[in-house]
Length: 544
View 1 (cartoon, helix red, strand yellow):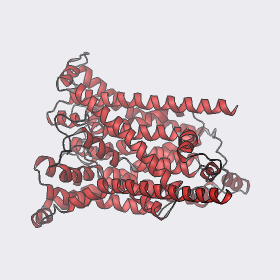
View 2 (cartoon, one colour):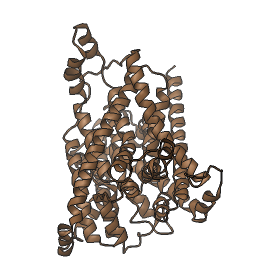
View 3 (cartoon, one colour):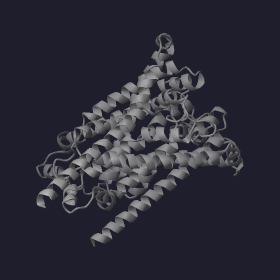
View 4 (cartoon, one colour):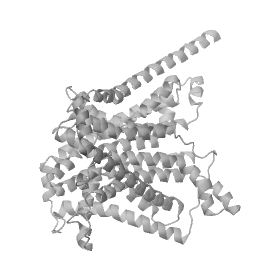
């Protein structure tokens, strides 16, 4: 009987390995079909005429130079600003830190093109501050692109740097202080080695986000042309797909470089298993400087939101201050409700599908390791190297003559693929921290893997699942680049109404759309916060 039981268990174990291998193959085929295949298909549209057009065009060199210069400067400004504010929030004892942290995230809840529009409302020719302070400079061109890009990328850099600082160990600093090591040498010997690898990753991530964005340059770029703008104009305006593919390759290069550097720049974090949190300092100078910088950043962000409200509900921002619903009604006449519903459906479907696939993929790569797991992991994070505008272009070239084109399903699919890597890595990191013997103990006790996942794994990772869902949802609501080539008049997401109203110079209606997106995303973030907070309280009560 023991022999039979042993053979039965061995057979069951082999069977489970085979099933896991099949599941890994299915997910790998799915990801390859909708990440790699469209990119490969895109390259077939490159022809000799397209190459000649790009090489001989004087616009190409100018656009590349402008993109590199503006992205490099904006990245530098963003990093300095994000590091300063993150340091003020995490290392000082100033009041209002939670308020500042919430305000700093607001720019992530609206499309990048809305940032450009907000700059026009505040600093444009008839802007609020321009008239109030009698400013003479022009915001169009490089200054506007820099300001808009910094606003767009700042929340991402701030959150990443805050996360790095939050888990830094204070013990080496305390030891250095006891030994009489000055602040400068503490920074060079302790701080810099700790943040060097994360900083490299964040710099390349921010640079990629800025150089591939066309929303801000479209609104405030003026004659300052960037590669993303040229790609958008070639595909949307002229339907020159071959030329658009070549410009897309230019945008793909920095993203791939950033991906490779990040892949080879894995940071193990603190070497110790237990870290000691920093005690917030009461330094008056540090708190004063922190207040000034954080208040200035928060004021700019809130001023942009106020400008949307003022324009959308009073009309001409330079002349009128009377409340009106005329522009809300006009936007509604352009099917605002229908397109907002489209966005919510796409975002919710993509969030649910993406969360489920990311959970399954992360479980297979962390809890059922094999030679195929590494390949599946690399495939799962590949979408991080593909800018949304390039992915959207590859999808229209792949699916334009199929039954999928023009459907909500295709928009859901492209969003799922576009934002897949970050939620996958969230779950990958969470599952990696769970006890590696859980499956072995469950197998010994006769508990099936399905029961283990349902009763132990998922409850342990509920907070991460909420974060994954909300990441997909919010980004699907604000994205323009990934869906601009794929939407029709029936399936259009609400974010594309901003570009439509901008082209028609109906900025009041565009402001209404931006506010609608912001409100939906704030509600989604609030719901996520409530669910996570309730889960935390429930867990705490169970431990008590």
